[in-house]
Image 1: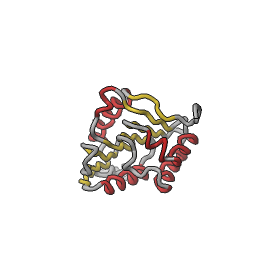
Image 2 (image 1 turned 60 degrees about the vertical axis):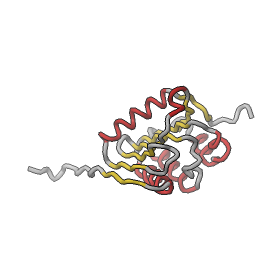
Image 3 (image 1 turned 90 degrees about the horizontal axis):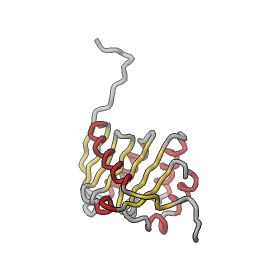
Image 4 (image 1 turned 30 degrees about the vertical axis):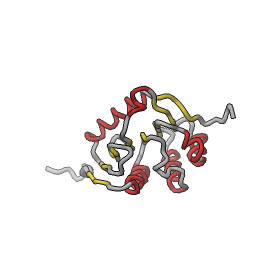
Amino acid sequence: MHDPEETVQPQPERLALHSRKEYRDALERLTALVQRELRIFDADFSDLEVNSQHKCELLRAFLLRSRNNRLYIALHDTDYIRNYCPRLLVLLRQFSDRMFIHQTQGEAASVQDCFVLADKLHFVRRPVYAQPRATLILNDDKECQGIYLRFSEIWDSSFPAVSATTSGL
């Protein structure tokens, strides 16, 4: 017998993406969906248009929604953020207690893919950073578990690289 109080879980979805624009659009979609935790791994952020006013507003809204929300960013190279992402740096200053930017080192520095994971429930991944082809997975906690573990390994092999302060300048 079906309980009418029981909530229906959305079915997992898998979408093939074929362009960098579709990947950026998927990042925006995940940023709008995220409720607690957003984890982003990328080579340098130069391809994501993260400094756009709209994307920064989505990130700000996410971080304002709850003091428990977290944004983790791991990059191979942080120069692009430092030099071309003033809006993102403003967010880092405003939310330095829950927004973290690390740079990879060791084995993690040679990883070739990139991905965005939202709440261990949704992700978008390009298997090879230099290629536009990607996959967007929605509502699949089992599929996301592997991506979460992958991000954790990358994060463990990284160091804090961009801070909210401008000391030393």
